[in-house]
Image 1 (spheres, helix red, strand yellow):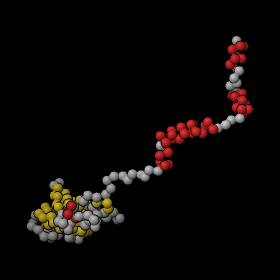
Image 2 (cartoon, rainbow, N blue to C red):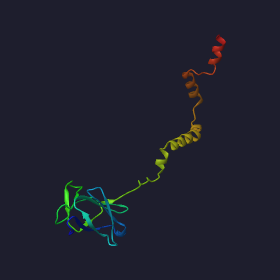
Image 3 (cartoon, rainbow, N blue to C red):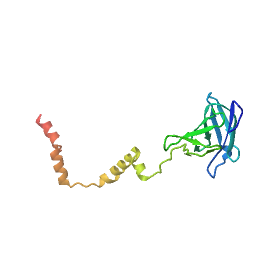
Image 4 (tube, rainbow, N blue to C red):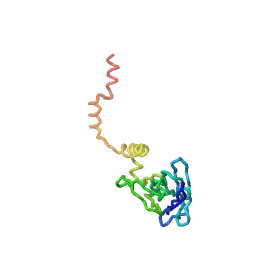
Length: 172
């Protein structure tokens, strides 16, 4: 990195998957003053940032579908730009040599994958349970046979004999 007294130059390359075009990648630099510098990559993914003011800045590559780690740029030294990123494994700063080689940390998923439709997932919804109950009442309940003697015993034990209401009326 060589530059004028008050500015520096940073170069690097944004790496992408084999089926993606690196020309659609951009590099954003958030300067110490809060300014955003947006740099478009060349067809091979390379970029050069010129006239970067001295200070501590954040650099991040952007490409649809990929997530890149943020780099911390320190351009306060008059001799070189020092780039670091926080390693997810050790949570420590790792120095990145120049030219910067920006590798994606992973793929971004914008939508939650839909669960596959199965018979059990349909049956255990409120509508599925109501349909099962209706099928049970329509087809199974009429086929349940009760012996007439067992039916009379059940009615008597519950106190629902047919002639009881008539007895109560006559006794008044």
